[in-house]
Image (tube, rainbow, N blue to C red; front, side, top):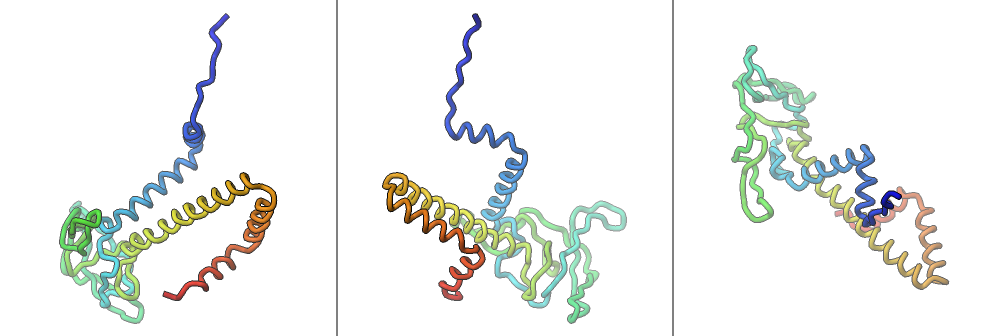
Amino acid sequence: MGASLTAVPRTPWQVFWREFKKSPVALLGASLLVVLYAAAIFADFLSPYGMSSQDLNFSYHPPTPVHWFDEGRFVGPYVRATEIVDVGRSTYAPTGAGRFPIKLFAGGGASWRVLGLFPTRVHLLSVDAPAHLYLFGSDKFGRDVYSRLLYGSRVSLTIGLLGILISFSIGMLVGGLSGYLGGGFDMVTMRFTELILSIPALYLILALRASFPMN
């Protein structure tokens, strides 16, 4: 008789990881989340400008064209300085001031602190004045939309984590007490949970928003 095969015991995390790797969609989603959270954490370094840096003379500037060739020759990424030619339509045109190369790991930008401790002005991408590097354009105050998007992602992604943490903690506490005590406590908590779930999420969010001050 052949040797009998015995199942190797696995921890819940091992089972989860085995099943998780089988789903390409789950792997893609996890990779995307890692990229988004990394961009939020290193927003100071990745953004060409500070969160509140503005230039009122360049409001509603379209995304800055990035050029790679000049008169048929490859010269690397560069932009051109622009000036407004139609205020009403927010139309800009090159000034003819020449090329402004896009610099990697250059200083001179908005100051920020590495790990909140060491001040630096090094950013991943930057250009010299009077050129601008508005990858997603600028808003009405002349602030870089791409930089503000990176900074704003910190708030959005942090709220998601906090929401999951709070709901998970409350669910574990209430579910544990309901399972341990049972009886009337279980019935009251279940009916209260059903009542909350019956309220449309939009109205619940509006009610919570109205309970906080405007600022």
